[in-house]
Length: 241
Image 1 (cartoon, helix red, strand yellow):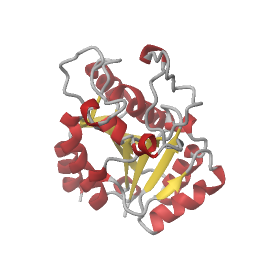
Image 2 (cartoon, one colour; image 1 turned 90 degrees about the vertical axis):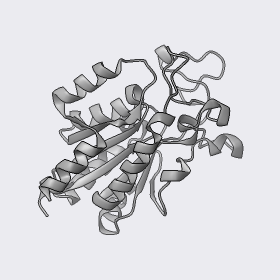
Image 3 (cartoon, helix red, strand yellow; image 1 turned 180 degrees about the vertical axis):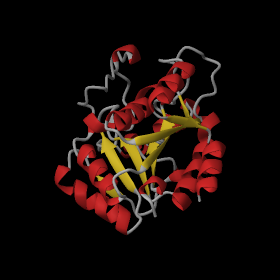
Image 4 (spheres, helix red, strand yellow; image 1 turned 135 degrees about the vertical axis):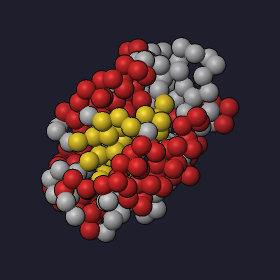
C-alpha cells in the first residue's frame, strides 16, 4: 500500500457533555452561542456516526481525542466562565471523583471505541508504543487532553503523531471530524497542518459554537488543506482504490 493511501481517522471530542443537549445532561452542549434557536451538535450526530463507521472500515488507525479535565485546569471556571476569553463552566471532568461529573467525559456511546489504547495526559514515554500497537494491532487510540489544543493539552501527542506517521510510511492523510468546529476541531486541523500533515476536514461531520463563522473556518482550512463532505470523501477514496 502506498503512503498516499494510508488514512488516519481523527475524531475530536465527541463526548457526552458536548454532544448531549442541555436538557439531556450535556454540561457544555455545542451549539451557536449567539443563536438560541440553533439545534446544535445533534444535527451532525448522524453524519459523525456514519463517518466513524467508515473510518473503522477504511482507515489504518482511528484516533479519538477527549477533553479530560480537573477543576484546576485553566479552561475551567465555575464562577464566571467567558468563552471569548477561553474559559468554560465545568465539563468533561474525567479527573473528577464524582461519577456523575466524570460520566460527561465519556465518548458518546454510539461511537465509543472498543478496547482503545489510552494516551494519558503527558505520558510521553508511552507515545511510540501506543503508535506501534495502534498500527500493528489495528486498535483505536484515545488521547486525553486538558486544553483545547490536543498538541498543547497533552505533551505526548507530538511524539505519538510523529511515530504514527512514520509507521504508516511518513505521509498519511488525516481525516478530521468532531466538535466544536471553531475551538477544538480547528486546533486539531491547524495543528496537523502546521506540522506538515495532509489533512481533510469533513464539514458535515462537525458543529460550532459561533465564535467564528463557519464559512471563515472552512475557507481557512481550504487554503492549507482539504475540505469535503463525507459522501465526497468516500467517493474520492473509492475512485482511488
